[in-house]
Length: 588
Image: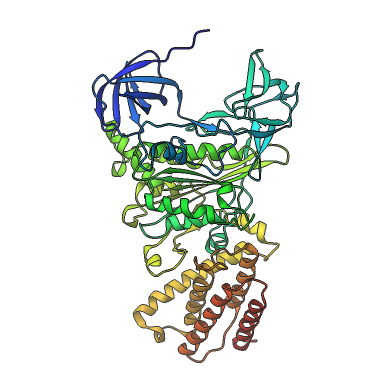
């Protein structure tokens, strides 16, 4: 049978990386194409069709393209290769393996060099779980291979809709990802071959199963998040903040310490220096949950600010497709996008070249729907009677000048379940993390409260009381800036000092201390119980100075206790000292 001939065309106009191509044949929106520039072949995507003329977005530098440059259309959409070998990999927005490309081209990556994302020669030990005669649907497992510590299920391709009856399944053994490991017949009697490798269009949500409500907390080891503004596995959150407020540092913490199985990091338009730092440090970092290298559970998509702007959009969707693939195996996955602002800026640039009617701040009118569609790919999926997989999505936002009223931030706030607003003033004051508890919020506190009530009764109510105390303390602090400490009542001064202690001892952590940088949930609950005892206490003081001196001393003791290993003798002694000090000052 003759292979289908793909459409061909020629460049008739060029505006930056936007090409106008006159073509013959049939093409579709989102189809991939190759632009032939001498010996080089540059990937492009069809983004608009009008009659026999199409507009293409080229993912590479477009120097050398001229009138009548030939273009060949692929017939397929931008796809991700899915299969064993994704973990520990570093890809660009088009899923090129950057390490392999660097070995082939040198330190400075050349354009037009595309390599297979997954190793075709490596053998994987396949263990069958299905047998001939089984009736399966898309996403059902045929068998598995071990990828690091995870069972990587070889599933019926998600591109296959309808039932399939297996006619043959390979015996257990070592196979490459392109080896046929099973065959079957679809409902029309057509023969289908199954391999470990499958492909999926990255802009289409990959899901099979029923979405259910998230209920489990994602432990991050960051007290201000886990206690004040928690996130659920399968939930969404965004972290807006001005440049230099610590968004990237916070995302690095989440990628290192979050209690999930797989982490997909998308550096979308991030500065190259920050990406290089991650690449250098991650292989040396140990996962506190498994005591293994963090890279063993990580996939990185790197599209830095020095790479072509057109690939930024692709990198976000590529990360989402890979994350959804692992979710369908029943794993808990965290997708971190840094930053969605630069992704939106890429959309704005392409929208301008397409001469579309601009929306607010020249962003395209469809900005909100694109951001919503991205975050809606998160969620918990019911895969079986007792099996679920979750995808949690967190995006950082870089609003110009720290203005949270700008369109990208507002579009994100309309869809996410938690908002972690970072403050430049707090980061300048060396407060880590620089999350402002007075503007941040979460929709997940009640669900987390149900999970933690067994450890500390009325958890959600007590957290809300803490938030209320912070607001009261802030109001009293602003009043004191005008009238001075002596101008407020002693009772108000004590409320202010309690809120200051909560901020200093609980909501802030030391990123350079091995004990304080990651605070396990057990330790958080114990420390929060102590903080609540201080909140509820009625203290005896004669003067404002006496109250301030006592609370400053208490702050230092609790802060120093945070740097001691939990359960150690020194920790127990420090805890007893704090208890004695509290008892000596409390009424009753």
